[in-house]
Length: 174
Ligand SMILES: [Ca+2]
Image (cartoon, rainbow, N blue to C red; front, top):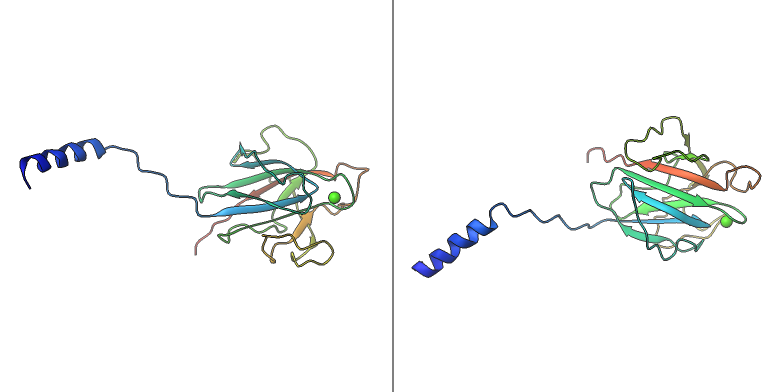
């Protein structure tokens, strides 16, 4: 190593020391659909916008899902016929099932990680699998994802056509 290259190495090591470590790439995504409107979607309380299929009852939206995500919060609206939520991710952490909590009422900060949803209802399973029976098969979503809502998915006389959902992701240990 000559003097010049030694100087370059010294400058580089000083300049790179203390530099922030780049965030790891997000290699997972969440694919989610609501019949009829995916009106609001939040990851850890941060709203996700620019959902091109939010108002398309049959085609899901896909968004990056960082491994750090703790809570998925969704507000969905049904405007005709039946209602459902169906979702899965590539990484195997998220499947729509009865563990998604729901409520018909709006609560302040309902989308936040630390919101207490212990009194919310467990979702009702309309169909166990995304297999194309009862409804269509929703593209891009695992066939092991259940079609979920409240038990009153055809009810427009109550508030069951507009539901707030929360999923606390259980990453457990693998
Ligand atoms: Ca509908």
